[in-house]
Length: 312
Ligand code: ADP
Ligand code: MG
Image 1 (cartoon, protein in one colour):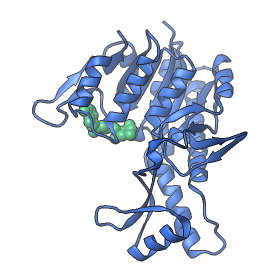
Image 2 (cartoon, helix red, strand yellow; image 1 turned 180 degrees about the horizontal axis):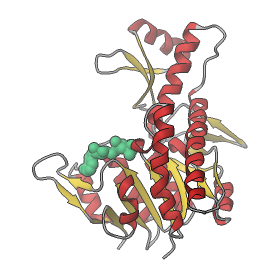
Image 3 (spheres, helix red, strand yellow; image 1 turned 90 degrees about the vertical axis):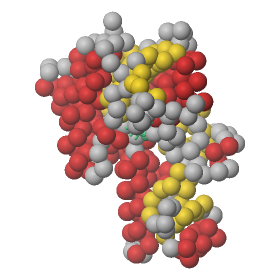
């Protein structure tokens, strides 16, 4: 069967530095091109935590020390990260496809994701980003720029930004048109550049949309059959990391909700994946979400491994 698949890549698919990333994506491209080779229509999403952190930190540091370097707003840092991660991914996927005599166009779309300015996440920013500051510097940033600053585990003060939910994808018609024309598209990188609507304007806001939720949203918009979240573990577990650990093959929406309520999934890592998988699976009957590792993507879609979340 030929499925329409949205694949969400986790941190382990990209690495932390540009050199590490350009090497790692060569491997990342293989299971993705396996899926393409088997006739699936693949659209890619990815995280950007370490990358946007690096860009933000570099720009912060440079603007603190060099008068010639302007301050770089956080949404712009996100856009930069989408560009350079997309460049590496499209480069590696193109090469892997050509090596197998597949000629399909591949491109990255700089993607804005619309969030609700009344999202309760804006009331309590939680996501630390960028450089560490002293208490005095932190105080200055609070009064001068209105930043939210928190003390981060004894290491100094850091800026925190909200993590709102994605509502819509501004470039969705472009992405759809490309996908319908058999292009491989890399989109909603890092969860997308968060923007709020103001009349005809889309205004970038300093925030981080979870890439798992953004992937679920674009999968819904594209009417995908499958959302595949590729991460560092082959399956989702209950009692994770304990002697009662149990790896799960299949979860109904009810079971998933029960395990969430029982606190089996760590917030900030597995919880958003399970929730994103549930959001997609519950959006329409027949939609399936799979959480597995990059290496097991192919076996996962063949039903041999991974944790499948289904709407029964
Ligand atoms: P990604 O970069 O792919 O988003 P994360 O580190 O955010 O990766 O999330 C994946 C990690 O979640 C796994 O490597 C694992 O250590 C952790 N994790 C937390 N709870 C669970 C669980 N219940 N089952 C499996 N993995 C879990
Ligand atoms: Mg994550």
